[in-house]
Amino acid sequence: MKSILFLSSLISRLSSRFFWPVLIVVFAASLTLLLWSGRAETMNFRDAACTFEDRLPGCLDSLESWNGGLAYFDSSLAMTGDTLWSLKSLLWTYWGLEFAGAGDAAVTAEAILPLHVLQMKKSGCMGLSWLAMMVAEARNLPLSVIMLPGHVFLRYGADSSTAINLEPNREGYSYSDQEYREKYKAGPWTGLEFKPLTPTQFVGLAAFNMGNLYLDSDLRRALTWYRMAEEFFAEYPGIKANQEIAKSRLPDHL
Image (cartoon, rainbow, N blue to C red; front, top):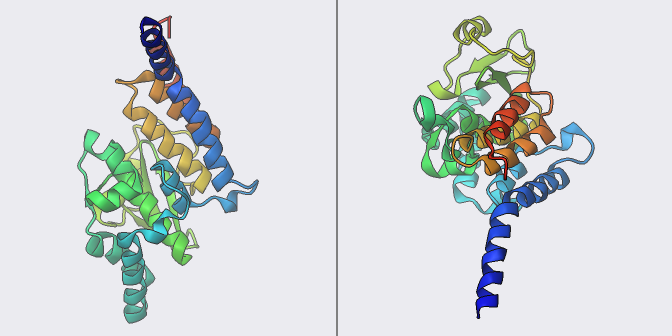
C-alpha cells in the first residue's frame, strides 16, 4: 500500500513538473501542423482561435453565435453595400462587444481569446482584433491588424494611403497614424510598428500576451507560452526580454 501511495505521489510530482513543458511542445507542434504548411498565406486565424481553446480546427462551424454573425454581416452588406459599416455593425451592434476596461481587465485570457470574447461580450484590443480578422478571413475583407507598443489596432483598406484605422477599444473610432504615434510615443518601439502582422506573427503575439498573464503567478506556465510565442514571432524582442525576466525569478531547483 505504501508503495502504491509513493508511486502515486511521484507521478503527481512529475506530472506537475513536466506538464507545461510537454504541453507547449504538443501545442506548438499542433499549431504548426494545423496552421503552417511552409507558406505564410496558409495561416488561419479561425483555426488558431479553435486550437488556442483546445478545440478542433473547424470548431466555428458549429458555433451559433459565429454563424449568426456571418449571416448578419451578409444581410447588412446586401442591404447597404457598405462593407466597413457592416463589419463595424457586426462587431459592436449585433455581437455587442464592449471594451473590458483599461489595465488588467483588458489583458485577461477572456479578453484575449476570441471565442471567450464572443461568449462574454468583453474584450481588449487583442481579442476584438482577432475576432475581426476571423471575419475578414471568412469574407475576404481588406482588413489588417497593426502593432503598436503594448497595443494593436485594425486597418481597413488595401491601399495604405486611403486605408481607415479602427480603434478596437473605442468601437472603431479612427485615429490617424500620427495620433497613434503621439499616444504611444513612450514606446518601447521595435521597428515592427505600423506594419500589418501576418497571421503567424499574431499567433505569436497572442501567445506572448498569454505568457504575460502568468509572469507574476506561474513561471513555468509563463515560460511555456513564451516558448510558443518565440516559435511564431521570434523577431519580436519583448518575448526574449520577458523570458529572461521569468527565468531570473526561477528558484535554482526548478
